[in-house]
Image 1 (cartoon, helix red, strand yellow):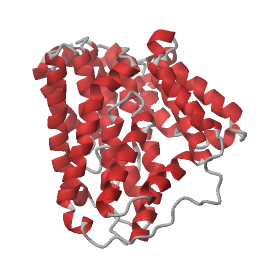
Image 2 (cartoon, helix red, strand yellow; image 1 turned 45 degrees about the vertical axis):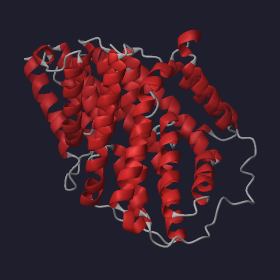
Image 3 (tube, helix red, strand yellow; image 1 turned 120 degrees about the vertical axis):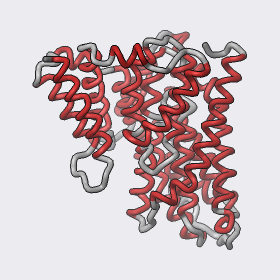
Length: 416
């Protein structure tokens, strides 16, 4: 009885996650995950205690800590001012494109990419309008650069956080192995954007733009920036200090709350509590399915093996399922399969493939939708077809780069 209920709830939940992405459906993805989690307890699949235990609290803690730190950076104006300074120095459309890709990718590597594009999108639209150029190519490059750059580190996006904490791969080790993918992917993005929008990027570029407000003391000491640097160093040194990555993030968040000089409520209101609820709900639904043995046959029959063929299969699965249910729930869904393989090669393949797959379509990653919604608020429309027109070559080539890099690292014995 419990297994039947678990099966029905599991199917309905992930069907809901997929269908809620359609514009005429009123229920959103966090609500679908939350309803599934409640149903698992309500229909006796899990006890409330088991449901709480199924939640990966390390991932929730890391996400929460980083969100508070990012809220502090936003309040202190770091991201906004740096973005305006970097973008304002561009003297041509190609220079602006390079600045967008470089800044977005670097910022997304060390901050959650969704937060980066949320802040950057209105600034970028303003910059493009002041220069008299079409904002769409730069907005598409921003969205895709945030995914590519976010692939490099554990803190680059939510799915990488889950993968990094599930595997125990060190922050530095994760960065070392996937940085080549991010760098090469950024070059691919720049080349593809130039080719697809070469006419727009050759048009007249206004020589003057308002830079950062020079009357603002933007170089004044702000604690959140120093805390971020200390947190990243803490991530790098966590293997030697014995302080786990989630605890480093929470400690940094605590320092931001204590030293910001603002009411904690001003920072907590910027935390994406809905995303945390979404993750928690997915963990409970997957936990109920695993606990009843529902996924045992899937895990045993999964075509993902610990060799390079498994890496190829994982890239294919990531490409397909990320478009259906998005890369975050896909990562949570496939985690039990990879846990049975005990292969860092497969885990890092998942981190790379699931993130890069988000660039194929507008609904492939949450960051894409944030850029589209932010642009719409500024009066700029990004269509599904326009995104796909650039996303197809970028995704195909960057996936190829990912496979090549992982094959070389595996052949050299850096990944097993």
